[in-house]
Length: 216
Image 1: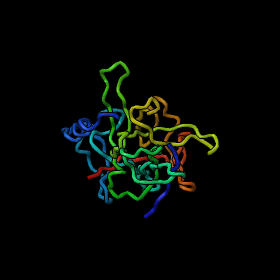
Image 2: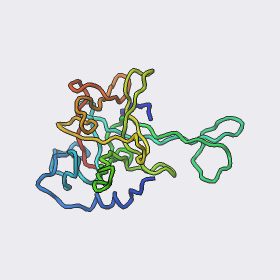
Image 3: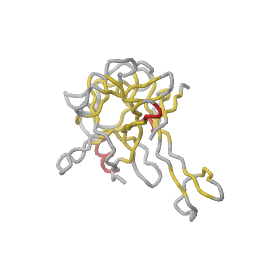
Image 4: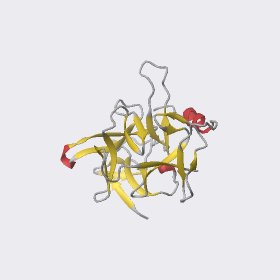
């Protein structure tokens, strides 16, 4: 299996996920590709906002043919020294939990390759969330959303996962296969196979096109 690791960085979404999965077909549905290399077909769910369908899907880089995958955060306890351990809520030791990360893996339909588009909040003061949220709820902290941030020492702006309730969560849009922050189409999510990094780079280079791929 091809694997590339990417270093990088409680929302009540259970009802939202259930709602996204119970929707009807629309004539405006996008073309998405099924897992396993089947021919492209119409999505069984409508576009809900910014080019994204309802329900769950994977994000596959068209050139690399790998899928954007979350990797679990790590839990450490201090017992004289810091030791990585299985997460527990009951420990009375000092502890720290790192944010989940991102990596590119062969598309296998696993839950960590599942994403959904959270367009809730349209009628609130702050407006629709328009976040790309990973399907895996991380320990006690809930769901994490795709974002990015500057890392000068690593030479660019890295994609990362942040708490979906954080002000750092980004509003996303997809158009012609390019994935970018809403209203900022000139900088797009790019996979760099040489280093395994995911960065926001100027539009027009290789490994920048993404396909929404249906998942079970």
